[in-house]
Image 1 (cartoon, rainbow, N blue to C red):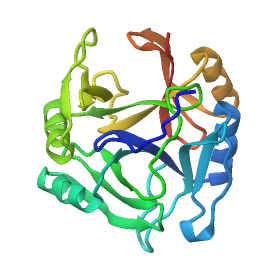
Image 2 (image 1 turned 30 degrees about the horizontal axis):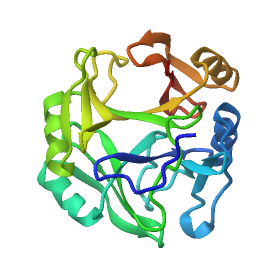
Image 3 (image 1 turned 180 degrees about the vertical axis):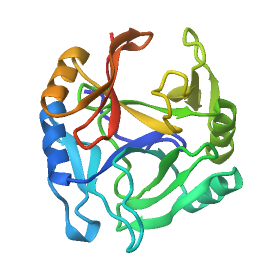
Image 4 (image 1 turned 90 degrees about the horizontal axis):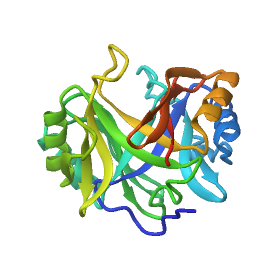
Length: 257
């Protein structure tokens, strides 16, 4: 199993979580689909559930929450980018034209986080590790395997990532229109336009989970009440599909050759 045992480098996707209308229903759905283990967490952390795969943290699931008088956030998967200093990153995000949606706050001794959007409107989180650095298993069936930014303006989004996080972006060979996000010379994510997304899709970060068999996973998802947004198809990286869980949160699944 590809285990992660050290902190993620700044700018690297390090964690994903879901804010669900029905937290327990989401925990049950992803348990059956991916084999995750998770239960409602302590009240002091809003019931936030750390889901694990074979005993290793892989993703978070929490109930929707919002300040009094504010609308509830959408049911979406959020990608978190690693930072050594959340406050400095927040300043860099704002200087690069981003928008603060939730200022940097401590999460007990676990870490420090914030939520922001880039100049094209794509929402993301930032995680500064304390006792917890993020996903401890990746690139394994049932675990996170990729994150990419689908944006209305590839050049603006790429410039923002370079300025706010110090990462590099470059065209990926054999994938026209697709740009890799590179940290220390290694591709850790991607940036792509919205041309292949459903019409009207706003800029967003897409979460990809690895699976043993894309087609059978999609069949199981549909039987469990999920929705197929783009059916299984073969591409340069493997056989993938875009789907949504029963509460409407979109994500991709992929079987890598």
